[in-house]
Image (cartoon, rainbow over all chains, first blue to last red; front, side):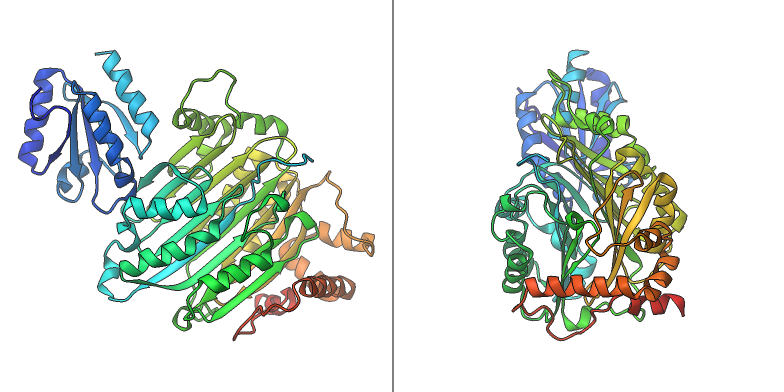
Length: 116
Length: 418
């Protein structure tokens, strides 16, 4: 297992973001992006659950994007509510979960892992 | 009616804070509260978070018993069942103090419980609640008022407590607040429509997925088009949702669908600068989702623009206005409490009811209602008697400290007609 597996990776620069997307394109791996904000209570509510999921699902890449830190990315992806989870496969958005909804997030990830 | 069941009627608490340092205003204030602290507050109330969503303006939580909204300097908690909502005040004030925030106003409202005997302390009676509020609030909130707004349907009276400090008094019309709050309580829901809020037996769907389906299936998703909805369906029945409207405002719906004590609530925050025809549309859609036999609408607003639309919106749907009461509160502005029943529903108006009174209620377009109210001395006397009786019941209790703003509908209606 590499260092990146089993945890939620914070993405702090646009370059790093593009790099992760590129990697995802090539590897056919499911990517779950958590668009979050430091001031968002619901994001703090779901953070421990997301960390658990990342531990349980090393085959999925979990990324965390702070919408204030990477404003342009959040704008490009039309993120208006926090947390927003985007599920990406081969560079395409395959699903989206808006809000801190534990069961829905888990099921949506499971659904896209099953079809992988 | 069932001997005992789930208490749908919520208790609602709204607290406003001001920052010790004005720079905090631009910050995130109460939203910085860490989740452990929030959990502590909710534990005192006896509920938990089931799902949540936030945006740049506020955080909205769906709770195991209703909803919580957190703004930088404002918090609104609404809980149903046998929760102990008022126990949230002390821990909240404690955490807010650590964030450099001081309480400046408080508003507590609720309807009449269906199962009052099941309520734990301090919710055993309104008197008990007011005593608890008085003891929990800091002394700078010196303008206090408690009132039970009566109604012809005894099961739907409206309980209001407000408190404010000197600087944050809401005195109309000098400091008009552009926001208004509609709190709607509906009972005896249409049985067929209520069934949509039950999960099907053997349904393995999660609360999130089932909630989403109910939002679509019942038409709730169309009440405020374009709002972002966070919904949840409970096991085996019941439903909650929070909607984020136009960025900084919310709507919230909670449903207890069981026959015998079925209940649904709808709360909506709007701006008086919006097209008020939209309010009428929203009300119509809400009635169509639940088709309640009885509903009460409480409008809290500093102007009279909104409540006068309520009757006009509901009457074409076969809802008759049964009563309308206005009261003024130092920390909230005017509260107008209106009750409606379906035309087929008979209500007991009391021993001295006569057919003339009933006719007047029938033509209750708000303005005409007020005019007839002024003329009809009998009705006025009955109302006074009712209030006296209520005052007697809560005798020995100090309702108001400094301000005397308790005016009847006649007093307020003068402003309207001038």
